[in-house]
Length: 380
Ligand code: TXA
Ligand code: MG
Image (cartoon, rainbow, N blue to C red; front, side, top):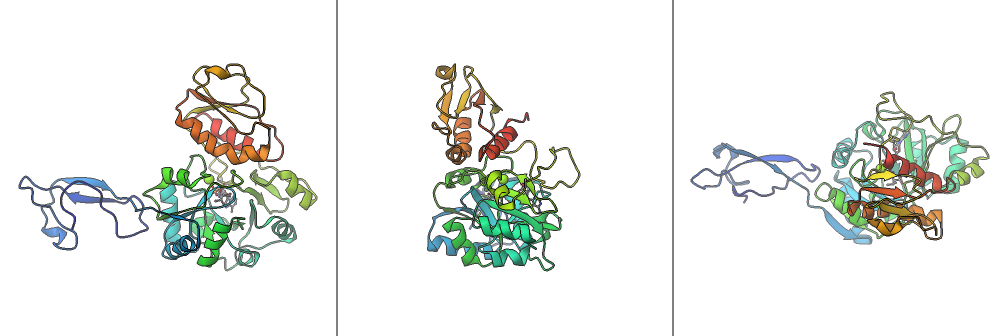
């Protein structure tokens, strides 16, 4: 029984993140205004309404069979489950359930025009969703499971809800290379849409703890599979007449071009004020943003700045830095990608005047790292 004391009310609907219920405060006679399940609310003396933020109880389970089964059950019931992939943690919902997807957008605070990636366990499931021309098939065979997302035309009976594809006639698909993601997808049996499991615009999560700090109370379950291996999101290739690199990511351009035998085209730069239907609507200029300003190509460190270093070189001013983290002391770009989001979060938590970032070469995963850093550095 819930009395008139102030506190949290949990919604009975596991899919309503942060619903706001109104509860009457007790009158001066201190009797409870109403009690759920006993007296009818109409009988209560509803005079002073107090908004009460209700949250979901977010469970955290270790990866394993019980975790995968719980995840599948919650997904089937329209709930939201965060789970690790090899790139970043994803926030999953049943791809065929528009209501669940609406809750997912709400939990992330994500603009509804930004479509989602459908995750599946195998190529047969991918072909039920999208149409693969010979080039798309070649890429899928070469790199799946793995950190590559392919944007292809939808099949006629594509089960992915229109809300997840934001009304486009194409769909983004990927098979993640992570045993926990695979176990959940197999236990669930259908496609799972999953953006990165962070509040929209925040840095993507590479640990379960990052998911918890952004989304606890807004989602049903976090499956903790430890740190991810790649650390930046998947590379997105649009399989159109000419294959387009829509987002650099965890698979380098060079490896994709080697399989295609042709260069990937880059789409024109877009920004948030552009209201035309973009090719990759998620490529908004300011994204992946820490709270502190980010200063790129730093050659020195100002007092009070944090330094995100790369490689063995020691910059002048290092001794006055508010904090220093090195993405890779040996200048290994794969190691740097895996550390990127976690280190940005850790430096940001020190509340520095700014985060100075050393130059990172634009090759291999450096293209994805620089893309994320440029977005993080856009003035807000
Ligand atoms: O590594 C990843 O890709 C992670 C993990 C969880 O799989 N997911 C991820 O999702 O990064 P998200 O939602 O943060 O990024 C998906 C991107 C967005 O930029 C979106 O605009 C783009 O994919 N996208 C989705 N469907 C598209 C479509 N039909 N055409 C073009 N871009 C699309
Ligand atoms: Mg994201």
